[in-house]
Length: 113
Length: 112
Image (cartoon, rainbow over all chains, first blue to last red; front, side, top):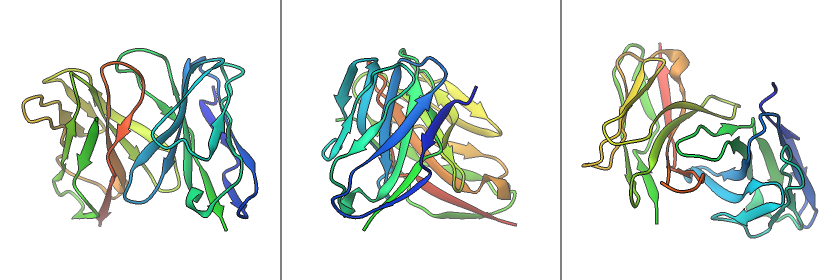
């Protein structure tokens, strides 16, 4: 049981480049989400999904796309990277339901030059 | 909208000192409340949680009580260790849905 895995751990991009951050979970969780962590701002929700084929926007969705073709995978795409997207990105998953624990991946540290 | 406010850090304590990290929230209805911990270079781990008023969450010597009347969920530990040095996040989950709303985080540094 690997839990929530994220790749890559570190990435440096130039402005305008695109890339995909990978997230996978092996706990059969329906709910998956992406957060970004910035100093002094805690974690902010980017996008989330309540099941395969269903995605929705969070608090800060601009500049990011997601899709959910399987229960296990929830990739985050940056179409045209900007320096403002320099951050640490965390993927999380949980069962749907009241009060349940969300499990976080180890994070991807992204720098956009 | 829903929000969480935590005391600003960093908080620097000597080993075996008493720890309090304040957390207050704004939400409609009865959210679930959480404390997450992030050790250096790692992701977030759930430390403890409480799902209804007057519940006390506890884990690894840490405790927090869900106080509806003061909309608070303060984290306490009687005797901190160097290994407790980390960033602590207070979070809420609204009554409906799975989204988490996080506070800004509090850095704790424990010196030997």
